[in-house]
Image (cartoon, rainbow, N blue to C red; front, side, top):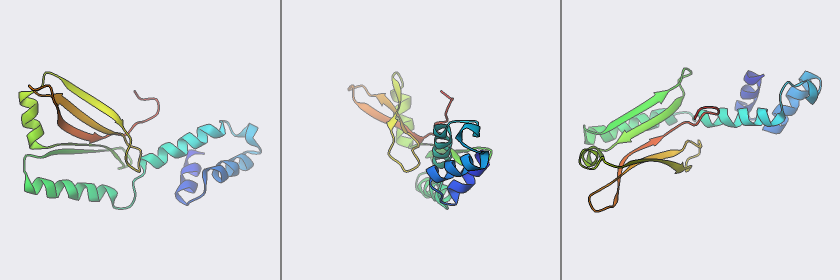
Length: 148
């Protein structure tokens, strides 16, 4: 059922039609084995994990260009078993130096959802000797249901 939902979503079928088709195939909504909301949640979660053609390569190329300009740039890309991008972390060399100097307080903040994949943009923020916030690193993270 999950494979059918994802395949039909990739083909462009709207979620309501996709779920209705499963209900018809099952002989009615009562025979579906789950709630329509569960199907919608599954479709939304799969969409969030699916990047567009060339997106991962574009991110990789961006980091490679940045690293050519500054070899001390740190970046890491994490993919899942299906070779889908899960997490991206990058740290500028100035941020590394700032961390060495001001690592007493570090905050990890994921309150931003500003991209089309709904991957939270996370910041690592420290406090300098003037009490000012300083950026120590950034990440895009995948939020998976049931994982805290």
